[in-house]
Amino acid sequence: MPVRVLLVDDEPLVRAGLRAVLEAQPDMAVVGEAADGAAVIPLVRQTRPDVVAMDVRMPLLDGIEATRALLRTVTDPPKILVVTTFENDEYVYEALRAGADGFLLKRARPAEIVHAVRLIAEGESLLFPASVRQLAAEYGDGGGNRAARAALERARLTEREGEVLRLMARGLSNAEIAARLVVGTETVKSHVSAVLAKLGARDRTQAVITAYESGFVAPG
Amino acid sequence: MPVRVLLVDDEPLVRAGLRAVLEAQPDMAVVGEAADGAAVIPLVRQTRPDVVAMDVRMPLLDGIEATRALLRTVTDPPKILVVTTFENDEYVYEALRAGADGFLLKRARPAEIVHAVRLIAEGESLLFPASVRQLAAEYGDGGGNRAARAALERARLTEREGEVLRLMARGLSNAEIAARLVVGTETVKSHVSAVLAKLGARDRTQAVITAYESGFVAPG
DNA sequence: GACCGCCTCCCCCGCGCGGGGGAGGCCCGG
DNA sequence: CCGGGCCTCCCCCGCGCGGGGGAGGCGGTC
Image (cartoon, rainbow over all chains, first blue to last red):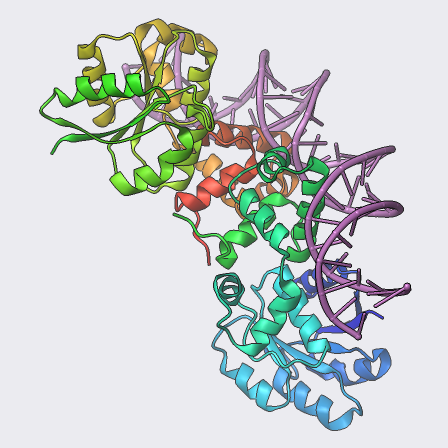
């Protein structure tokens, strides 16, 4: 049973982006879109999503009011993931007080977005953005907040996948990685594919970018 | 302040010879030795040489790969003087493409060696006459030293190439870059090829790594 | 015992990528 | 004026990459 997601954002571009990211996952389905908070309640009743990805700033009814209205009027309401552009958006905290389950930065990478939605759907509250540093902290050391750690449980690359990603981030080809790890190239291809899937990357270049951006590997 | 030189050659005899020649000069100091390219990067970080005298043919990691790795991973990298036995070594061309600053024949006289190191340290590209012709031919022009030097000038990306590299570093495919820049994909391929050549990268992934390692783009 | 995650390897297949050429238009400086 | 750098676009071509399957062994847990 897939995670059913409803997208609420006044920017079509953002909705399209979220849809693309989420529907790339086999276990996720976008069941509806709304351009404003005012349209949310009937849509929720109609589509019964597990998670509502809710923008904070919207023209008619903002994400805070929409969250309040939703929780007040709908029985067995969906989880609410607040989506925001700014890290220190005061509205976000207000939304959380209004009953939202977590928040997410728009500039988060696909893998983080996916993880956030998945976490929220499973009832974890996600009060910290699935930010890049926490991903980094996971591999350096386990010291992070619980929500982030839970997210990383799912995001976690296996040991072998981590090795492969590190070598990818050093510019090695599949054949070179195979030689280095003393395995077959087909094996490396399997690991690479797994890494790409888990990171939400289309190709190795994007995976390496994610590795840098997440602090998984560091420049210099 | 003396010119600090790091020697990288798998033959101890050659290292000893270079050391003897260079340390006979009052303004030169050999700050380290390595027997293989694989050992270069940590040694460079540790000793901060001005010039690396790099053999081309070495057991584990050859001079070409070592040069690439060095330029890719070390900030403010040293100048690289490729040392070779053969005048028409195809590897030399590769090494220069990889970003080496010049090359030197092992049978050169002591005075020439000293001269070469000094020139390299001062930022001059150095190509011995016999091979300049060959290189000029390789670059498809009889313009002599000037053309070869210009072609070998590292990381001198044109404005357009810089734009392309930035987009590559954001994970865009050639087609996506073409759409973004409103040009044809063939044009993008031309720029990408130019970027790869100038950075000594084998593929776009290595180019992006270089972009990160050099600070051309920054994480976060 | 059965199950499951991980690692390993295999198949086929399409396509994007990168190398090798070349060429025309533009502007600038000698 | 002509040359050179830059940007643009074109050709052909080989191959690595990534997606789609599947499968066996191995060490865990239930």
